[in-house]
Amino acid sequence: MNLEALFLSLRLAATVAILLLAIALPLAYGLAFSTWRGKFLVESVVALPLVLPPTVLGFYALVAMGPRGPLGKMWQSLFGHPLAFTFAGLVLASMLYSLPFAVQPLVASFESLDRRLLDASAVLGADRARTFLRVILPLAWPGLLTALVLSFAHTLGEFGVVLMVGGNLPGITRTVSIDIYDRVQSLDYASAHETALLLLLVSFVVLSIVYGVNRRVWSPWPVK
Amino acid sequence: MLNVQIRKQFRLNGAKPFILDVAASFEAGFTVLFGPSGAGKSTLLDCIAGLQQPDCGEIRLEERLYFDSARNISLAPQRRELAYVFQSLALFPHLSVEQNIRYGIAKLAGAQQKERTLRIATVFRIENLLSRRPAELSGGEKQRVALARALVTRPSLLLLDEPLTGLDAALRRSILEDLRAWNAANRIPIVYVTHNREEVDAIGERVVTLVEGRVQESGAPRAVLDAPRSIELANAAGFENVLRAVVVEHRPSDGVMRVALDHAACEIEIPFGEAAPGDEVRVAIRAGDILIATEAPHFLSARNILPGTIESLETRGTMVALRVKAGAVFQVHVTPGAVRTLDLSPGLLVWLVIKTHSCHLVR
Image (cartoon, rainbow over all chains, first blue to last red; front, top):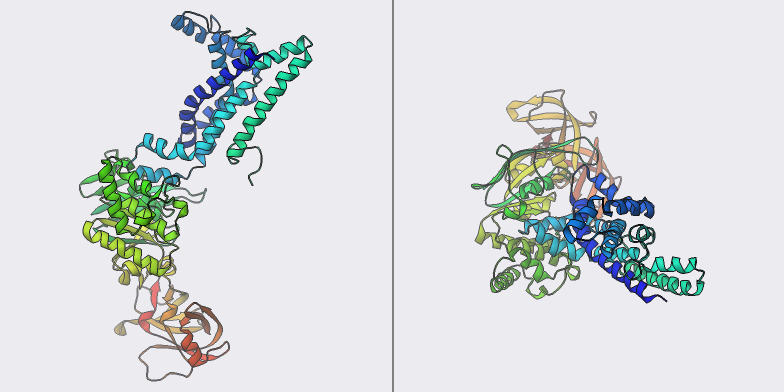
């Protein structure tokens, strides 16, 4: 089994999950509580990675991150090296790809909060930041955990975006799913199976944690 | 003194637009905001608290401006320094009773928080519940905690949205007494929303009635609610009989007029009011204000004596509700003792006795 690829995937998934949470929290807060009429546009953009083929997403990410793309140019001038086919580039593209998996559970759990609790907090003198930290976050933590775990699991298993943006550089961008693909290409079914089974088990455990902790948020199954 | 003069138009589930148009002032002490469900009571409180924005108008507590559409001023709820107890209470479920109470005084030093929390907990008799979570409290305990959490902040205005619904009368009285004791020392305006007539009587200070978004009347509870001037208010104030009637005859010299009830099935005398002969009006009579006799009564001052038959009896707690057909159908409340003594049963011929001044003209 290719442990290097496995650790790379875990590192990528963890980095993406944590960075994504930082972005998804304010985004979800805005989507859940704003009364802005154009909100549906933001919602559509956030949900886009759910329906786009990963290759399409990966293609545009690659164009943007390439040496002539806006993101790639900015990165080159800031850090002195290109962005495409690096770990950082992979993280950025994966964040885009897993965005709905972080945002939607958060929005769902924010929206299910009793608004009167937020009103009560305001009337008791708390500003928005304090209300968020003392009332919203503690009550929405199942949504937080779901967002974290789903974006981790989703990133762990991604293939198309990684291939487009990252290529297949051992130790840098060769993730588990790419490794499996490689082995199947070279007809090494036994070791492909080993890695695939491991990925299957990890995904199953991760989802069991999510559904075990909370059945209300982001579950395709009816709530009992 | 709280002065409110606001207008707000909104829609509830696509229904026709509802207009809240209120001009009222609330002095220190209790003012009951009374009205049927859907009259806009909670929306009015939300506007005062800053949780909803009126379209225009002004809200001011003493010299402190909360809201002024002309000058584009709207103070954020957290800066209005008022307390608001919601109908749902909205205790923070993840915090203990003590943490709930300390939530609004987090800016004070720790020792001071502790001291104030203990003092208010003693006033509302919840000092032994401080470590519990809201889910572990009874209904009455939750209501006490919500009041303590609101009042520990030493607000300059208190808004209460049906804070005691669902409690039995004794518990309600005891909490009201604690609240009244607290306010004797603090003297701030308390706006107390209810649609429960018994609570109005228990508080017994000023009443402002709100019907379909407008202030209809204000004054002492007896004056306002014992002679309701609209049918919504009559229903809300617990008048069991609101009967259709047509004015038949004016007798201004006696201060009365005669009306025919329910398509001229019978006539009664009611106090003189603003209605011309031939006008369709409604007459409100409390079921408890009607007397029952099993023989034709004589030598009575009551002007309305109507023969009829009992249609049904229904025991409700310590009271028996009768339906009596005497031309129109009347609801009459009597005691179980009266039912036994008079041997009241369905089909029995009885006489209803109604004083003129127990009949109220409503529009």
